[in-house]
Length: 387
Image 1 (cartoon, rainbow, N blue to C red):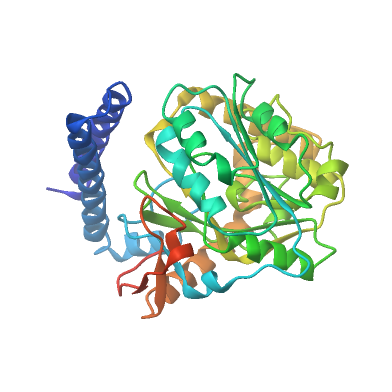
Image 2 (image 1 turned 30 degrees about the vertical axis):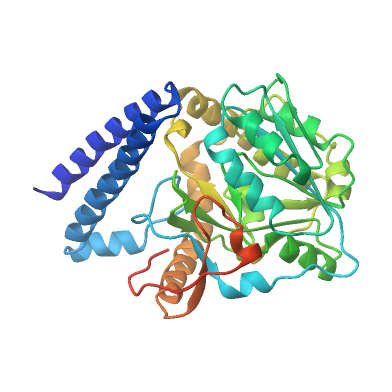
């Protein structure tokens, strides 16, 4: 079978997986449901194996290899086969500064029960001593309520009621909060171990910085690592052309939030974080990228929504025009982003080499992302590891 044929078969497997996921969303729990879940997980592995083998065979071509090494990894697509989610052991040694600044995190949610618990655990089990954590659900009919009730003692507050969308949920979540540092985390993403303490310490050491962001890990539906975004320093200088700042790694001071209007713009459904960053910039924010993986962005089938993609294109065009004072085509914007992309490719290559070193790393437990609070699992990075 030729590589192109393997890619086609992988696409067929992907379609079967999506249809099975749709069936699972409409069936109740039980032995049959668990069996179907196992089949769905296996289909993900088969698809990844087909793609991996196709890529391996294509790499025999020097031209293809050169193109692959110089390609941007800032895409919402898997970079490699699923692997255990790991972080450097030093992440577990992060500690907050003294005095400890308050951090407010809001999670907007709707019909994301199958991922919500991992998200909640990734925040509350960081053990940050001055955390305000609010979950604002839009009235889900899945297992969301049971999850929120189970973890209610760990949350500052939670609410489940109809809202006007993600931006409205975030605004309602931030109402009445007091944390000096703020962030929102979507209900299918994760914070990586030690991130809250690290961010708090960075802000304490850099009182002139208003906004920080970092690198992101890509994970699949089963909490397995499938890639990474290495973001070069200075990405905020490219905001007039595009937004490649990973939202789940973004934290800001309350003072800049208030200076920028203290609200998410509810007219945006896709690019609301880019709009917020532009307003931060207009308010004079000083932004810095930190050299650390802060969060994990989940890739899953529910994200494939043509309506949202169309909205994203419209909103992106609107924001580019607003930032530049005139309409800017995607082609022109991409050309202006090239210096950043080239630096990203260099960082990605260096990171791949670093991850192949036989260093000990902490394996984040599947299904309980922050179980490190009660113990640690250390593994040596596989020689073939790629990020």
